[in-house]
Length: 70
Image (cartoon, rainbow, N blue to C red; front, side):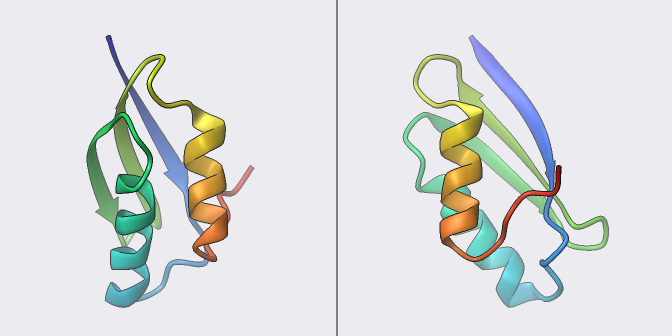
């Protein structure tokens, strides 16, 4: 079963940031799709339940320098 989540990434401000966020999210095993909305400073991620979880995604974004807003 797939799970879809949207995360606010307030430090994302340019195309380079968006590309880094997308790469970081895609690096998590189990992630199926990633859509970055730079104007809204959001990333929408679809992942396989059980193969990936929210904490893994948040950690990957944080390690790339883009922490998720609470």
